[in-house]
Amino acid sequence: MSKICANPECKLEYEPNAHNAKYCSPECRRVVTNKRVLERYHESKKEVVNDRTCEECPTQLSIYNPDNVCAGCKAKKLGIKVREMGISKELVEEMYEIAQKNQ
Ligand SMILES: [Zn+2]
Ligand SMILES: [Zn+2]
Image (cartoon, helix red, strand yellow):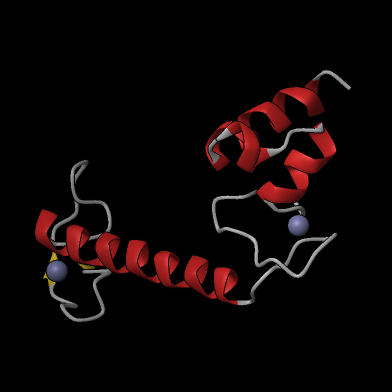
């Protein structure tokens, strides 16, 4: 029984088998998968745009920061003076994570 390709830009009739359950060709599967990946990418960008700010100060949070406080405030909580000690934000993030785990 023939099926219609699930790629909306193709819609060719084809004979499905184990390797092409939804699409007429690997090319069509790739096109649709790429589109989904792109859409998801844009979705996540949207989430990032609704800009989160730090709970304790007006600093905008980095998209890589999963927490509600900025690196500066994390450092404060940890009692580290970032500037004085020349510690990188990344290291603060790491130390904060460890401190959270040990609580
Ligand atoms: Zn197709
Ligand atoms: Zn902050």
